[in-house]
Length: 222
Image 1 (spheres, rainbow, N blue to C red):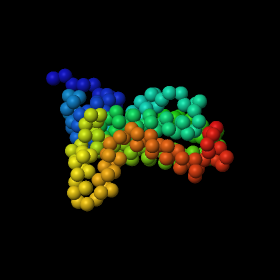
Image 2 (tube, rainbow, N blue to C red):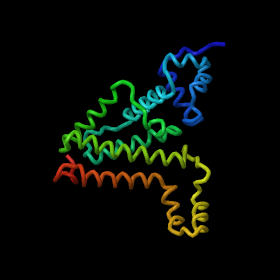
Image 3 (spheres, one colour):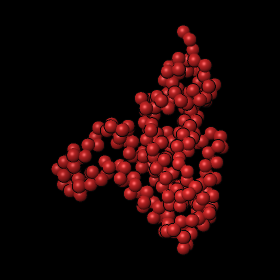
Image 4 (cartoon, rainbow, N blue to C red):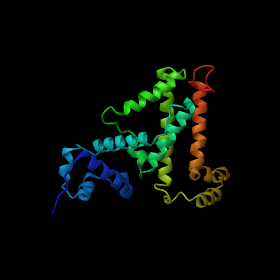
């Protein structure tokens, strides 16, 4: 039986494809090896453990996200922050458990710094200190990552819904227990993610304008 000639890119591409089928919990080096028609030890030449593979997968996801961005240079810092977070969410939603894979992983290499440098320069040009720019970006990133983790726990993939998160069933259960307000907000908590994400982004930007933006330039941008 023929075997596959391995390299890191092939392993990562295969892992990202399998992720949509089996999720993060089911994604094992043994499962990837089977898909590639090789023995599992062959993968350890490229990745010493699963976390090393997840780091490379996150790096690949980030590169794909950056490649999909439209030109950001003409945007105000507010528009840029929003557009980058929209792009991050789209990328994470492209994979089952994409946000969980991304969370806590470390990028391999330093090529991600090119995008980071451009982002920081745009904020500094708008009057932010480098430190304030970094903190503003981290706040927005943390919101997006946490939002998508919660979103994917309810809707792992487009058109799928995890059992136990049916809005009508939750409303009835909470109402039967006498929790009228908890019943009333079921739809706000477990559906309409697109609208809720945009609402959250606006709140994040408003908060950054109020706390980190340079005085006198909060609304107008650069």
